Length: 205
Image 1 (tube, rainbow, N blue to C red):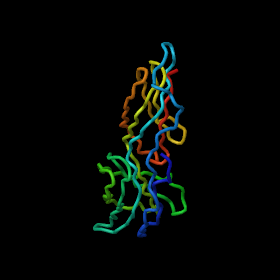
Image 2 (cartoon, rainbow, N blue to C red):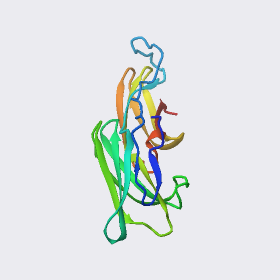
Image 3 (cartoon, rainbow, N blue to C red):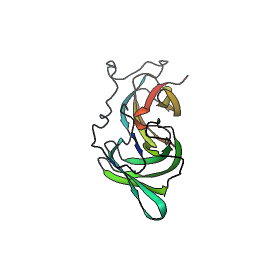
Image 4 (cartoon, one colour):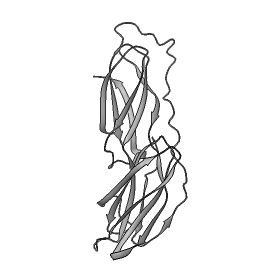
């Protein structure tokens, strides 16, 4: 799941329209050596490979900041999901200025289900704290799926969700020789950028 950071930093009261410059490419099956008919001798360790990955792949089409009643602002984002169906969320963060890195103070977040290839809007209406002059809208997902094929012997395997190399979720399961299994993760990855999430599989230690 390689891709650019899914966020935009702009000043309060600024409208920013951005065209989609490219979606995450479809996840490709991991390459592997020819395993013949997939049979494995007894006592051989599992040899799992990832053959398919499924996750929403959101990107920002445009964002808008519109003043509304009582001194509040409505922060809106149109989102395109180029990946699998699933829940996509947006988090609004307050920043000192537009030049600040996207590690500001979280304000609130919204989420909803997106179908594959769906465009939809998420918005947050709130007051702007006086000490902040910019905001960041960050996208996130909380559903990941993976299909694993075992070219080795029967045994236990570990499936790990990583964010920039750091483990954020995982599961351990039994797999038979030649078996293909699907594993789904449904976690709170609101702090992770979709493009930084990855999946790995290995024999259990």
